[in-house]
Length: 358
Image: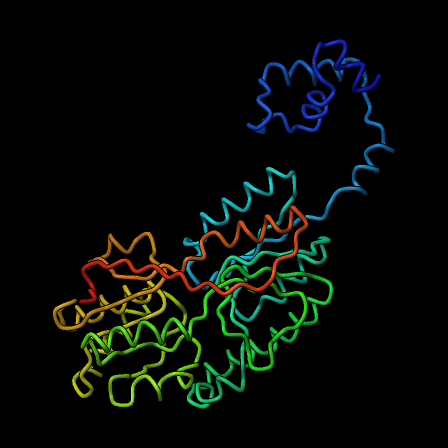
């Protein structure tokens, strides 16, 4: 008894029989009614149908390896749910298996090792990815607390191990933070797609200050202030404060309280932070300290989180324009197409109550 025999007896296609016997009939793409699937499986049992072991082994050996999807659990998990949904939908459309794993900053190499043990050779990361650059970030490292320095050293070691793993894997980084490290960073196995944060900061800060909305407090995104501060703000228009870790609203609220005290000695009109959740926490801390937003201090975020319009004071923010990068990376995998590093610069501003350009 073969699949074709069962199909002929029941008046269905061999493909339908195969789907039902492999319990894939519930997939909405195939539109197989439960009654039909039940009838096919019952008839196969009655006939004593046994799958051809050689055929099963052949299909298994020919099966493409699964695609890995990595979540950074530190930076806005909820903001990556739609890209995750879109990526999975495309993988399923092409009948590709996938493995989804969450990892913490400084532990990405462990997630890659796990994926590699499951035959995964191509991975898409859903979360901001930035290669450390000791040369460019030496000023920031010198100012670190012992705890921050420990985190920095762990991150460096993490990337050393990642570089070794990428000798046999390819990682697509749809939300990579340019610029690349001095020297170019990892030379093989990393496809970078994202924004040039230093250039973006330079553009936004110049616009804020040119409109008389400074001085500005901007939390350090990547320790790259020395790239543009001298040419951009020769006076006290620029005030940098250490950003909190981890990226959570409560950490932002505590920073807001510290900024309120800081403002008593160093006046500023605007706070700009590269994460909407942290920015919302800062806004809460400033208000709890007696300051008005935006009358006393304007607050500007980045990411255009879904919650921005619903915050205590609707948060003004920028959209990075990289939402479609994850699907683009997955499409390159399933269609076996090579893509090059891409730097996006099409930021979109969403002005709300917390801050407005003139």
